[in-house]
Length: 103
Image 1 (cartoon, one colour):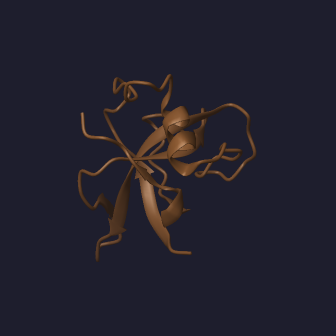
Image 2 (cartoon, rainbow, N blue to C red):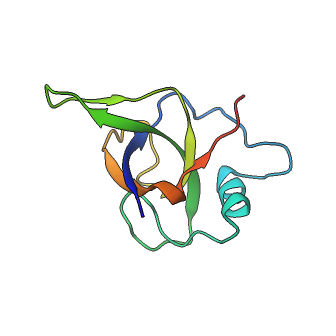
């Protein structure tokens, strides 16, 4: 499996899930064909997960992280990890990322 680095996307709190889905985690569950059981950011087991908007990041030569592009992905996240103040970079399996539809 391939691991990539990601961080919470900024300014996505008002994005609604696609028609037919009550929440972003429902969208992720449907696209992956399974029910998420752990946060992909802190790896804690949880029943209260949400679908977090994340973006891929890379580290520059100066050691700073930056967003690679504007593509948004959904990953299961606990409430504690899914907030705009959490700028922690985390590793996630590429296969756990579900592309978010463009608004």
